[in-house]
Image (cartoon, rainbow, N blue to C red; front, side):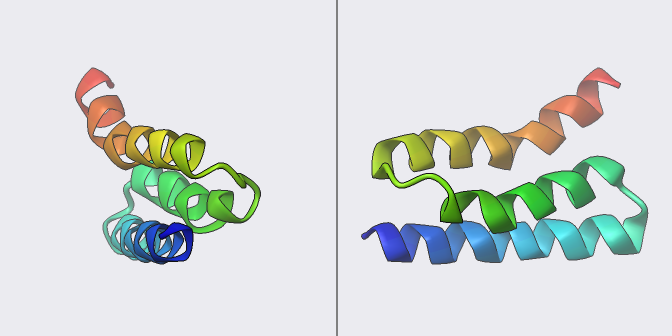
Length: 66
């Protein structure tokens, strides 16, 4: 389960990175990079899930606030 979750979140992070690079969206670029690599450093599945959800919605929230 942990490997599958890491694979999904890393794939979404790659999508965020590509989107941020093409459109010049700095938030998506940065959050995409973090999403691609954070899963390698967080061993706990629950903690990894919580961090992943926060990072997935982060660019949308920051874009509305700025």
